[in-house]
Length: 459
Image 1 (tube, one colour):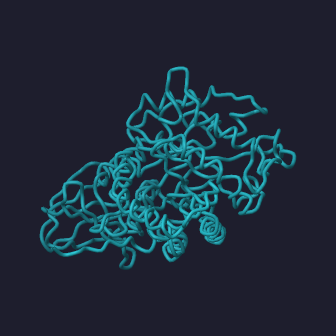
Image 2: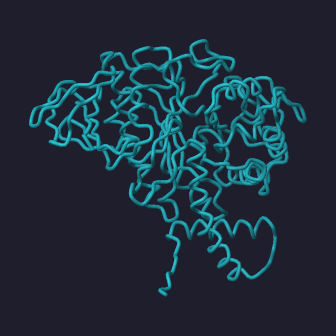
């Protein structure tokens, strides 16, 4: 009988080592590290497949399997939205979008459920808005929910609150190297909370994002080590109380790779906290193709960092711009619709597990043309996966894909709006974002424009 030797890949071994080191630090148990590390590696190798299964069941893409390389299978939760800013255009007061476009994950940030809003005074909690979210999410299942930490309450902030912002970007005044008692108390109360209707945080919210945009002064003014000290005990509370939890890195604005490098070093030095690498990037007045270089830069930085290359990643907050949330007027309406879809496809074609739109209902949900294209794109890709990065020849982009039914497909568009694309003989038809299907003749060009089409193969 042949003996088979099993070895975890280097990234997995590094993560086990840092996790084990954190357990020793946190528990204060002084025992044989070498002996326990062997046991930990064996148990980790046995439990790893089960962890992947649980993520699939949750609705968020599993880690890419061996056949898919870096490309995860896409689900409804690969499409994210943010709601509840209090503005009438963006599903205020925990109302749900009525649009045909229905992303699979809702992110609770700027939704009146930040730390300062839920915990307005020491020992005092205001759960009314959170209860509405818990109840409306329960009425729109299946749905994943992400909670994002941020905004220190004024009563515990190290410095007075600025009048422009609802809470403080300063760390709490009781923060030490071992955490903040006031923040830990809030996290305990939050994860233990249930709405009067019986919908509980620990059952509804499985994704927890560490401190919104900490590289922006109005959100956070402390150091990277201070933020780690704040989050480490709090994340331990969440992991203890919420089964199947997934933790995201602090999501930096502008895809700031320098700040993220510092954060990654902090986790490497003191223990891994995160499961998903998260950042934010808006299009501003650029096309998706122009802007995507910044996504590549931060993702490539992660992928070349020891112990981080296999970690899933997402762009957790995007839109055209962060002020009015509208496509720049220099682009034609058809181009704006196309940009929504192209931005998504470029992310997924580089291995993203999710792209989430801030002010989703303002930009997409309430605009029928945008919403129809967004829903059509979801129907195309859910259950499938990309097979390679999107590539360009001149202004024509193409992205190879395998549909949920196993058939090969290709997304194609022209940045300049007009062109012809001659597909290979395997493709028999194409679909457009308006829901039309047309046949493709061998050797004959298919019309392409700023709105992507999907070429389909017979097998």
